[in-house]
Image (cartoon, rainbow, N blue to C red; front, side, top):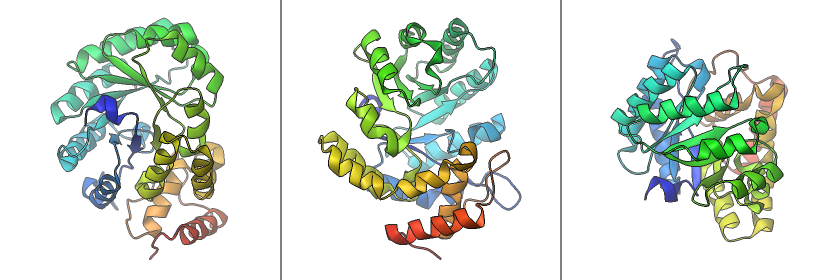
Length: 299
């Protein structure tokens, strides 16, 4: 399957495991990856936000990318997150190409003084460093405006956008303003997928695939068949998980995933600050109840 066709499926944002000494522990990801691929995961994503990209050093981000590409072994196209300073992003882009990634997911620069035209220059430099790998733009703030989004999508090598703002109307404007060949992916996971599908997005990102890939794939199948009622019912069955992840200003986003994995006997270590760790007693009780209702195994 090509990256272009796979992107209309599920982009699974994988956790970055740590050991007891706070070192990356890629081997712990093996069973999680294998289950997700067996369930039908279309695109494994390394160095995404669920992978704690901003808590990793550049060396660690390079290493986990190489390890994941080797683990996948050609079973699916790997999308590698790159970002931070433009030099860091270019270094990571070149490393991802060497590791065998199929494409790059370019994080939107978090710099408080990022000008829209400066972001265009940023992406152009990353594209050059990536040696021809296709680029997905990861858009978390649509305040740059539709014209700037169109300019970004016109950069050679950009094939799509992971739209991660809760603004379907702005997404519809962006789709209308850009080349019809651009792939628009819902970047706010399962809960927002129906609303973004309704205006033209296809596929979605998921952190749920780390613990329950079968449910993610079922939601995707329902949306692809146009059965929004079935999709909403399936989403309702995992909504408690996403509610826990959204607490503390989204500071429990990865915490929730790693706590669930730990409860399921697939310990990937704690999150790093500034994410919260561990879940509070109330949050943990809710997570335990969610896992029980979902029929997911617990230690």
